[in-house]
Every structure is written in C-alpha cells, then in structure tokens.
Amino acid sequence: MDLKLEGKRALVTGGSKGIGRAIARQLALEGVDVVIAARNRAELDEAAAALAAESGRKVVGRTVDTGDDASVKALIAEAVAALGGLDILVNAAAKPGGQAPPPKLAEITDALFWDDMNVKVMGYLRLAREAAPHMAANGWGRVINISGLAARSTGSTIGSMRNVAVAALTKNLADELGPQGINVTVVHPGLTRTERTASIVAARAASGGKSEAQVEAGMASNVTIGRLVDAAEIADIVAFLASPRSVAINGDAIACGGGIRGAIHY
Image 1 (spheres, rainbow, N blue to C red):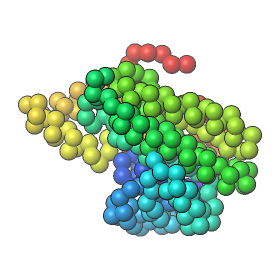
Image 2: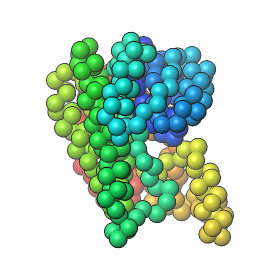
Image 3: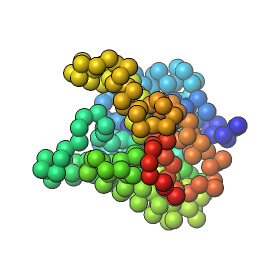
Image 4: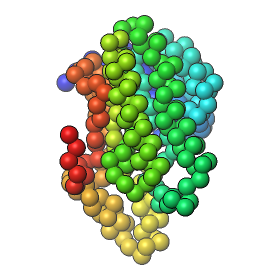
C-alpha cells in the first residue's frame, strides 16, 4: 500500500532513541523529511546522520525541553524553517516508563508527579498548540500522541494518570481540529523492545538468578502474541496514522501491545 507520505514534513519528539527513533526512521523510509527532537545533542546528531544515510531523506536534529514553553516554541519555529512547513507531529518525548518499579503511594512526591505530567501531558499540549496553526494553514495535518497501556491498567499511579490524560487531550484536540483537516490519534504501546531492552533483560537476569530467556518470557507473559512487540512494529502503525490513508480514524486510541489478556475495551 502506498501511504501517500512522499514529500510530507514531520516533527518527532523523543526521536533520538527508542520508539521515537523507530517512528522517525519509518517515516523517513516512506519519503518524509523529518526533524527529530530530544534533549541530548550527541544522541540527536548520531540518530539524524544514521537515519538520513539510510533513508536518503532530510533528517535534522534539534534539542528541546518539552517541559519548557519557550523551548517548544523555538523548536516549532526551527522545524518549520528547516522543512519549509509542517504536516505531521508525533509526540513521543516523555519520562521513560516500565524500566524500574513505579513509586508506591508513600513515595510519590509533588516533584515526581508534576515533572512527569509537565514533560508528557503539557509537553504534548504545547507541541500541538504551536504546530496546529501551520497544519491548519494547509488544510491538512496529523498529530499522533504516544501514550501507553498504563492508561488501561493499574500498577503505576503516575503512569496511568499521565496516559489517561494524553488520551483525553487527544480526543479534545481531534474534536477541535478535525474540521480544519487535522486528525489527532493516540497510540498505546505496551512493554516494547527497543535498543535498551537487551541491557535491561541482562540486568534483571543477573539480579534475579534467572536466564535472560526466562526474564524475557516473564516480561511477555501477559501478551497474547507470545513475545514483546518491537519498536519498529509500533512505527508501522504510526506511519499509517500519519498518512492520508488514515482519514477515517480521528480522536481514537490504538492499542499496540501485542494483545494484553483480560479486559475488554470498546
């Protein structure tokens, strides 16, 4: 299927590694010019160079702190200048989750809560607010918010709250921006294989006296496809949502955790 993405222009936050990098890569391979944004300059430079060499598209790295309003405004201006406009925004910059036990109630501080919500929820809102006028001016755009399946389960109080908030943000933006040609969707990954997974599995195996295979099997024990979903497989879904082919989907959540057992969502 031709996704009709050739020549589109995208900004991917959290794009130097993990799911964000996989998304930027897939968009570039589909013919999109991409600005990737994150905090670490060295990681951005490496990722931009590698993705540009692989895809043959323009891939530019820009630093950003999504928790800071001025930094977000500067990023959007730089992205528009670098690409000549903006068609697609993928919000993937957030504090990492699922790599360590989440804090229990007594361990949750104001600082932990507000820092997490400011970077992810308010960060996503800031990016959408600044990007939407550029898309509306062209009568077309896509905003894809990367959230997570903690929105549908307990176990991480802050994780659940921030991801539910992203879903609520998404639906509100979709209702407001849809008439301007801008579709807004939210993607809920589960535990996903990225470049960090091997080291995490090794550390858990060493500390728990298990083999790496046993640890990974435990991580995927509630996944109906029987294994962890790869970041590249999340990127495939996002590339479709970023495309004109996805026009029928607006304001909805797409779960892509490999099928989590139990609850029915409708």
